[in-house]
Length: 75
Image: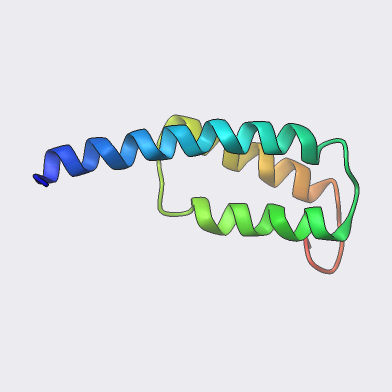
């Protein structure tokens, strides 16, 4: 695959993943548990390599949710 096409494919994958993450964050906002806090941190870690606007929005929302759940895992 050519570099430009590979970059476009990665961007589409990141955008698609951000859509799925938004729906998961909607559910996470309704649940208060240590496991959810841990998964928010996993999401934040996994989103690090991506810099699209959609991923940045997801990252910001996940940070806000993690901050609202101060546990030993999410702190």
